[in-house]
Amino acid sequence: MPDDIGNQLPHALNVLWGRAKPKGRGRTPALSLERIVSAAIALADEEGLAALSMARLAERLGCAPMSLYRHVAGKDDLQLFMLAAAPGPPPEFDTAPADWRGSLTRWAVELFGVYLRHPWIAQLANSPPMDPGQLAWLDAALRSLGGTPLDPRARFSVVMLVLHYVRGAAQLLTSIPAEPEEGADGAYAALLTELADPDRFPALARAVEAGVFDPHTGAAPDDDFHAGLDHLLDGVGVAIERAARA
Amino acid sequence: MPDDIGNQLPHALNVLWGRAKPKGRGRTPALSLERIVSAAIALADEEGLAALSMARLAERLGCAPMSLYRHVAGKDDLQLFMLAAAPGPPPEFDTAPADWRGSLTRWAVELFGVYLRHPWIAQLANSPPMDPGQLAWLDAALRSLGGTPLDPRARFSVVMLVLHYVRGAAQLLTSIPAEPEEGADGAYAALLTELADPDRFPALARAVEAGVFDPHTGAAPDDDFHAGLDHLLDGVGVAIERAARA
DNA sequence: CGCATTAAGCGTATGGCATACGCATTCACT
DNA sequence: AGTGAATGCGTATGCCATACGCTTAATGCG
Image 1 (tube, protein in one colour):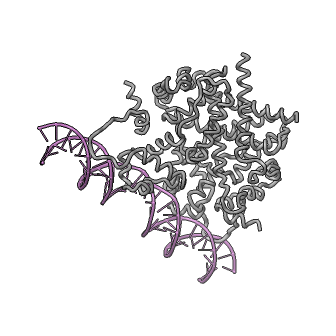
Image 2 (tube, chains in turn purple, green, red, cyan; image 1 turned 180 degrees about the horizontal axis):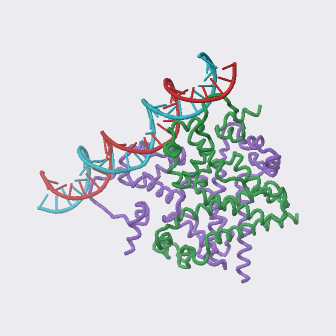
Image 3 (cartoon, rainbow over the protein chains, first blue to last red; image 1 turned 90 degrees about the vertical axis):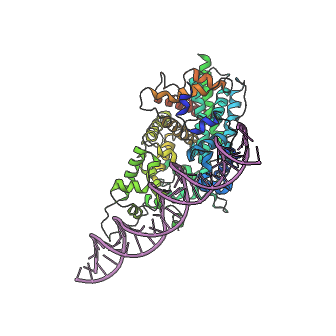
């Protein structure tokens, strides 16, 4: 009885994995799970996760707040659906691409884009991925290493490494607002300049002095991201060579 | 007038950086910022960030909810204080340690411990660090690279890379509950076993089959962490050698 | 054609939450 | 003793998630 497992789970997961029952009777639905989820995603994108409340969502959908609960078990449930839907499909790879580095880079870049488009994802992903959406991304990343001599555990470790980097980089980038107001873009840099006392924080002061925090002098944010990713993949390359020799 | 900057900031930062005014008059405080913050940290540690409310905190401190607002501008402010205080002091390094890899590893391991002790930190850190506590950690990490030929921007990039990895690894580890209930520790593994359809998610299915998600067969969580960290630092090593040659 | 069945939509109510505002309290210093 | 100042806190407001149950409307059977 494999359903024993499913019965202890959030309702959203059972729906996402297609365990929903096909009903025919009753009133014709004016609302649908899809409409609700995509409206919720749009709301979170536009006004931030904090602005997402059942009431505001209902308002946006033109229905009463309690109507939502016919399609979603609760707010947590809704957020699971959002998490599963927002990323969209991952890039498609063969099961063993010849160019692991190119594939994994593409995967990372696309995921980076997802996080930039939906910054709230990073704030919601507090539980391990169990929905088809996220597992598809995970599978794609594992596939990109399909042609390497790494063992399964090492592959997973590499994928998590890349995932964490992408998440962190996107979160950092979206958290420094780069305010649309005039030249105030470098507010963070200016603040650090004042706070980084060279006696107390010598290394930080030198970094600030070198302009590391200035509004991306010379390098675009994407370049920074790629630079870090390359460091990381160099390390993966070392591991792959080592595994190939063994 | 450097204070122009400070006036637009959260109140917490001005206090943390010692811009507080030394008062002498008035009633003797029964509450103190320190007591409030450490109680809040204890509450979040024990019952999770969601359980942290001004009311519950006041209850724990034996005061009325509104009393807290005499010491803290609001909940956001309180969380800033928590974020600054919880990590404690970073490991101390010379400004240019001979062994960058050992130093950075120590830094990462200690920070990993911090995240495991206070899982809520990862959920709160949505804005760039601007308090003395976090900047001290940042400075320590930058110092660990002080003896390398990397330029300031590359150093920062490396530090962020390590930081993101540590955060992500800790978050992943704490999000898979490892439930204290009997052998139910591998609930996530069992669920994935059922969900990872080999047709739809071939790479994932293979990983599950290989036991990657089993409750850490053979490898302790710390070993997994170290393994990933070593991959990462291998990549940093490559960058350092490259910079040394140039 | 009408009626029972079924599920959707939603009104109301409850309890928790952050917090604005103002008053009462109690100390330090004159 | 008195006065100014800061603390502690009671009250009130408005937002929030959501339990419960009624109303509404569509289905399909008799």
